[in-house]
Image 1 (cartoon, rainbow, N blue to C red):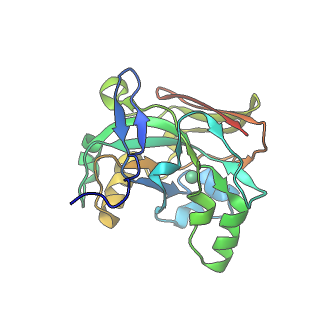
Image 2 (image 1 turned 135 degrees about the vertical axis):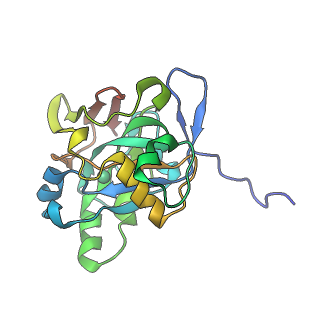
Image 3 (image 1 turned 30 degrees about the vertical axis):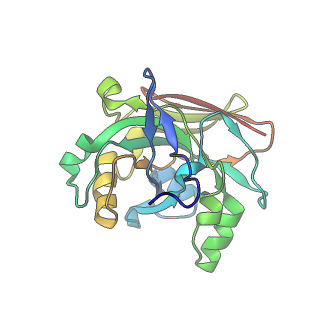
Length: 227
Ligand code: MN
C-alpha cells in the first residue's frame, strides 16, 4: 500500500539550542484560565470548570509574520504559555502530569473575536474564530530538562512598544498539572500534543503593521508582525 496523494508535512516547532524539530500532533487550548481575563470577557471565574477547544497543528506560524485573516474586523491577540507533551495517556494523575512534559514555548492564540462572538451567540462551535490559517504564531520550544517547569513568572504582551497584557503564570485558575489531568479524562493525550494554557487580561485588536512582542519569564520571547 502507498499514499494515494502526497501526505501533508508534519507540523513542527524548533527545539531551542538543538538542531531538532518537535513534531506536533494536536493543539489543545484552555478557555478563560486567568480570572481577570474571564471577567473582562463577562464571566464569573469562580463558577467555571476548565473547558477546551482546539486549533489545527498546521495553524502554527514560525516566521513571525501574521497575515490579517479574511472575514473579520476584530482580530485579537492572546499571549499564552505552551506546554509540549513528550508522552501521554488517559486518566493522568496531577502529581504525574509534569513527567509527560517535554518543554515550553510562548504562543499567540490569535482570535477572530467577531466570528467567535457570533458563534457563541448562536451556540455554534468556535472553529472559525479560533482555528483559522496562521492563527498560532509560536516561539521555539525550550526543553524542561533545561528550564524546569515554570509555575510562576511574568507573562506579558506589548503591541508597538505599549504593554497591553500583563499577568503571572501563578495566576492560572487551573495549573498545568491539572490541565493535563483534566484534558486526559476527555482525550487520549499523545506525544506531540501542545496545550495553550490560557491568556491573562488585556486582550485586544490588532491591525496590519502592528508589531506584537510576547514574553514569558524563563521561557522566552516571541515577536510577530501583522501584515
Ligand atoms: Mn486563548
